[in-house]
Length: 178
Ligand SMILES: [Fe+2]
Image (tube, rainbow, N blue to C red; front, side, top):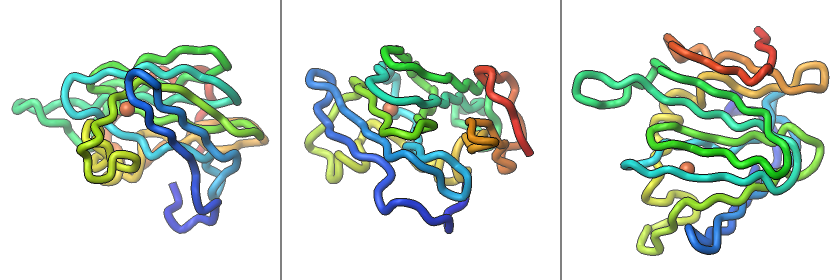
């Protein structure tokens, strides 16, 4: 939300084991200019899905699907479906093909997940930029359609003004603030 905001040097840590061993992600707790620490968020390249299991902590998962133009290309600023899911330990979250996804640590402790996305060790920088994940659309829009921010000590959503439309949304019971 605020690229110039101050925060920890590293926001999250990943150990990539791929589909068999699983990938473990650990988030630092805290906020940056009021926004809770999150993973960057990406869309998958191709028809790839992913399963996340919540291992520890309190978090929110954000999923969004962009509308497609007549050529089947994603429309950068139009979200066809947005979903926020408040997680608890043991929850399993499915990221279907086409759904961009990120997770946010909204608790006071570390937040940790296990997921089964593949690791291709021929990638040049597989830990930071695995070949199956596209970060560019998220970078272009400076995040997803909503940011998860701290409001009176609790998570709330704040709209990202760069998106022109959200056609369908399920905010998981989280309030929206200006
Ligand atoms: Fe993914």
